[in-house]
Length: 406
Image (cartoon, rainbow, N blue to C red; front, side):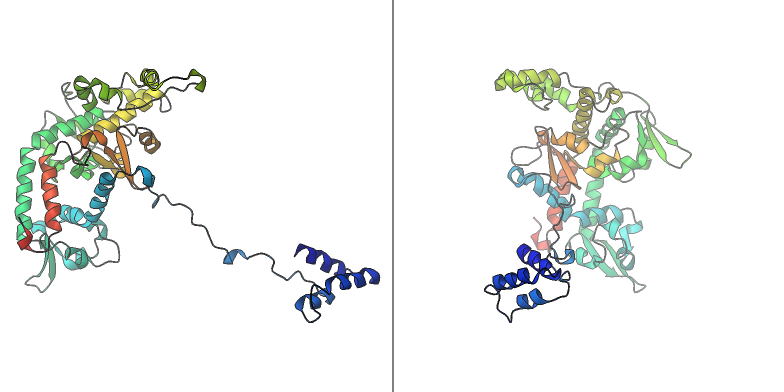
């Protein structure tokens, strides 16, 4: 095409007849007289209208990788049981959110017309019918017609009995939950944080739905401050040195070598050293040890230096150890960003510590697991009574008939 363009340009400029005659004699064997090429060759009009490149609108657009769908882990490094737990939580989103919302309603019921509009609160996609998701859990939810001829959504009698059982578990574990809240406040920068933040993450730590009133039962430990902007701040009144011991520090007394391998802060060096693996580990321990307690004032360290990173890694480790299932999603961690002095580089920071943490899900909605909390089969090494109850609830939610109950 380039040769043809040169030749047609020459012809268009009306060069000497001799050269034009030579040009025709050269092209005639290649293109017949009746062909379009011969017509263009002899045409006195411009050929600039010819499309020689594919227009942009017809080009196939390459899809840019999206953080919403891109997996954190490469397929070769996926740990199946952790990824399955993320899938389980997504599958039961409607069950979990609807349970939380209905338990706060009078008599645990809600008008069906209203339920169809509360897609965020009840955890189903916008534009879908709520009845479709209710039908998936017939042992948990039911729809019935009231005397006023209105349709209502509520719990089944079986589910109401389960809620009573859960309430007893909450009562038995109340003192443990008090310790958890105290440790969260002791880790926070000023030993205080908004009540709403703990309330939003209450299922993560097993605290009850009436948490805002529940803390008032412990005036010697907590104090609630009403600020001018209307927010309620929970403050720690008494420091408990027996609680200011991290899970890693306790583990250090049992298995020192295991704790030494928990994190990795390698020392930069030239390849010319030629160190063996054993010597490399010893060298890296100079950076790793001593660890910085999450109950210290490590937040004062600058964000970019090693000590600051060691402190923040320790905070995340201790935070996860306080959760029921030794895991938390990005939204839970971001909730306490200011109180724990975390940075926007938390995601990259955790990726550099694969010995202790596993990040599952996608780059936008990732979930971090504390590996020490699980065995090689993906089962929690220690199960809180609330976790045992939740697992039973998930099994019942998948059943379609009472005959399937054990």
